[in-house]
Image 1 (cartoon, one colour):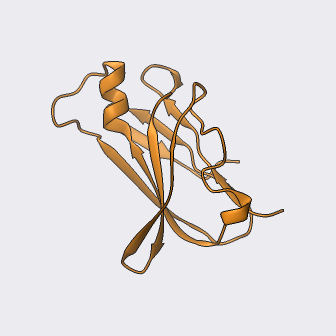
Image 2: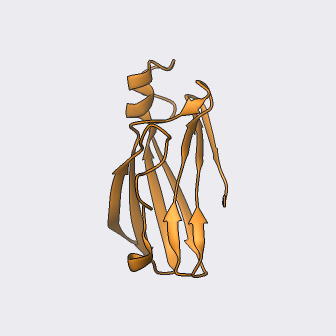
Image 3: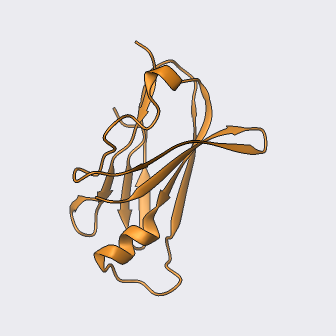
Length: 117
């Protein structure tokens, strides 16, 4: 099976998927960041397609950038200006030709991630 990358964003404060959250994907090569993809989460907190599909998959170092602040503003989440969490970058490596799933569990004052399935 060819590799691909998916994500899922859950709003743990509201207890629901984070719909309408913008995500960007970058490939990291040395000190350079190359924009690969941009997507917005659907009603289920997922992107409609893999954020990196099988045709474009390559092993290496990547960064998912979640625009949490704009989402939190739209939901009326508590927090001052500037927000404690605004842009959440997650840098990770993909060493195998496999399915990588990098979810984000988000609240106004914290987040967590892991390699999912």
